[in-house]
Amino acid sequence: MKSDFSETTTTTETPKRLLDGIHSPADIKALREQDLPQLAQEVREELIRVLSQTGGHLGPNLGVVELTIALHRVFNTPKDRFVMDVSHQGYVHKLFTGRLDRFSTMRQFGGLNGFLLRTENTKR
Image 1 (cartoon, helix red, strand yellow):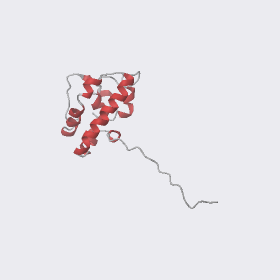
Image 2: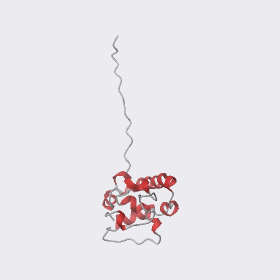
Image 3: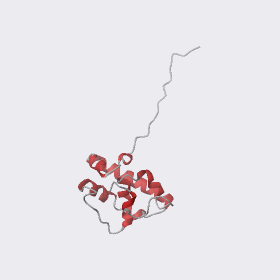
Image 4: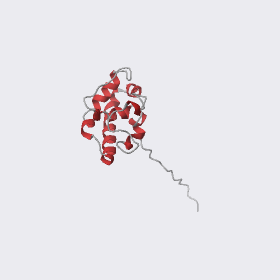
């Protein structure tokens, strides 16, 4: 006997992270101000996820998340240049300049360098 009740399948789609939409500093400028805390949290989660596997400079980068977001919102990179006192505070900058897809290769053979290298990306 066929039932009149039809099953509906609901798929719960994981919401896309804001971080996944950041490919250049212009993408940060386009975000709404109220979305910036969420972006900062996503960046911290990505730093912890990757660096717990590959090693690297976690503390200095966790400390500059909001600073790096602010720098990219206010200044016009690459025309305006950043000078960081230590290069290993640059992981967040790498995430914001088109290197998210390679971030899990941080400090691995053939992967991203643990320090800032202009040759890694043209979206400075």
